[in-house]
Image 1 (cartoon, rainbow, N blue to C red):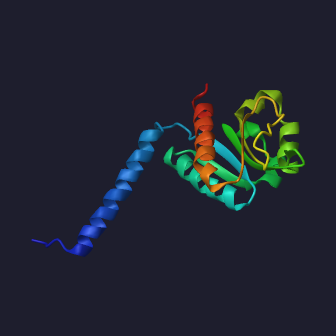
Image 2 (cartoon, rainbow, N blue to C red):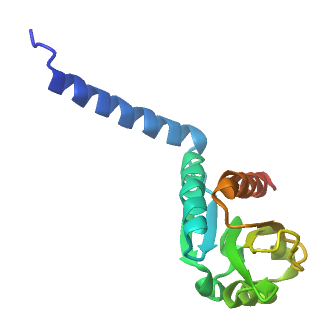
Length: 163
């Protein structure tokens, strides 16, 4: 009879963890179903990087497929390829940065509802003039990370569940 050693117990725990994770992933998406694909475009700042970590965790937990790009690369993307498009943008001179602005300007009206936009600005009362998008304005403060992340993940969940 084989003895249970610490090494064998650790190996069994690792294997069990892998099997549980695989089972959870399978339970989230029925066989033959495709996972919702989400595009996330963000600028590199300390605040947005912290929000991105939490957004990635949330999307991974939901078993969503996602792609992360820089906001400046947004104009080359097609919103129709995604269930939701998340934009983490800095407002400069009271308007979104060029990549976000160009993407939104070229976006067909029937695709605007799939955009979730986070605008960071020093003016807490600034509101986007972009019509038809799900938007929030926030200061880039550590205390706002959870609020912004929750907003994004709730909006993405709503878009994914929409017919």
